[in-house]
Every structure is written in structure tokens, then in C-alpha cells.
Amino acid sequence: MIKIKNIRKSYTTGTNTLEVLKGVNMQVEQGELVSIMGSSGSGKSTLLNVMGLLDTYDSGAYHLNDVKMEGLSEKEAAFYRNRFLGFVFQSFNLLPFKSALENVALPLYYQKVNRKERLKKAEQYLERVGLLNWKDHFPNEMSGGQKQRVAIARALITEPKVVLADEPTGALDSVTSEEIMGLFKEVHEEGMTMIVVTHENEIAARTQRVIRLTDGLVQTQVPIL
Image (cartoon, rainbow, N blue to C red; front, side):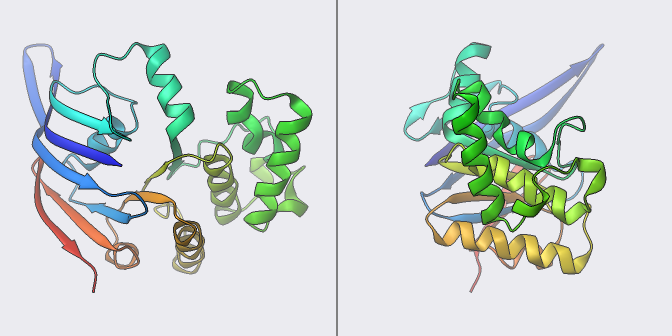
């Protein structure tokens, strides 16, 4: 599903150049639940941004669903993001002026699905994450765990091939984190490919395989027994 070969990525500020990814090699098969771990500055968020087509890479090769992601225009990158990828972020990234229902339905707006159909589907996905009764509430009326459930419903509504989650439990307490990972496991068991960036060993232990980054390189890829 995802093939990364010798990916390099640098950032230049003034006269200084910082190489963040130094030749990353990794592969994620369809239906896998994988975690990416590493200390701050190891390159894990940059790698996730490259996989999510939110950032470009300097050299190497990235294949998503057997299609090479290279030289894409912003319009082309948006097409692949909308069709293949779902995102879950630590900060939830919900629009504060839209209800839970409207937030979940938003990706379908960009796919030009009509309003009646997208709201109906959004209700189905809110029900799936146990928040249908909260559909008319706004983000500032919800707990962190509820907001993350809304974000997960939003990530799933386009029926993506891969869900990318960047520290999805980082802003949550341990009990709520367990609930969110339980939801991830349910989604994964239905066949979804999922990649979770985390610094928490407890979260990584709930995945099938841990990819560990150190200084911009993959050091280990360890299956969870």
C-alpha cells in the first residue's frame, strides 16, 4: 500500500540547511496497523507529512497504492489526499464554527457530494464512533476524547485506503487514549491500513509493528508479538 525508498528531505533557512530525512526505507502492506516512533527531531512527523502529501520530498521514491507520488501539482496532491488518505491529528483540527455533523461531512463537500447525502453519511459515521447524540454540538462543547472521535469519523467518511494519525492520543488522558486506540483497532479489524505516529510505548504496543526512527533514518522495524 505504501512504499518508501531512500526518501530524503531537507529544509533550508537562510544559509542553513537541515536534513531531516536521510534516506528512509519502509513499506506498509494493505491492512496493517503500524506505529512510527522516535524522539523529537527524529523526522517522524516530516515522514508522515510526506506520506500524507502535505509536504514534498527531495529525492527517493514514494508509491501510494502502486502509484508513484512525484512531481504532483497541488491539485493532483489534493486529489490523492481526498481519494486515498484520512487524517487524524493531535490537535483535532476541527472547525470551531461548525457542528460535529458539519465537521464530519466536510471532506465530502470537497468531493462535491450534495448536502443531503453528505449529512446523512456524516450521521452514520458519528453513530459509528458513538456520538450521534452530539451531532449538533460545537467543538468547544465537547471533551478532548469526543473531539478526537469526531476527527476519526471525519477521517473515515471518505472511505480512504490509509488513515494517518499524528500523535492522536497526545492531548488525551490515559483512559481516553485507550478508548481511542480501541476504536482504531475496530476500524483496523475491518481491513483499514493505519499508520500511527506516537511517542507513547503503550500506544505503540497496540499496533502490529513498530517502525523506529533515529536521526532521520529507520533503525528498526519490530513486529509486536
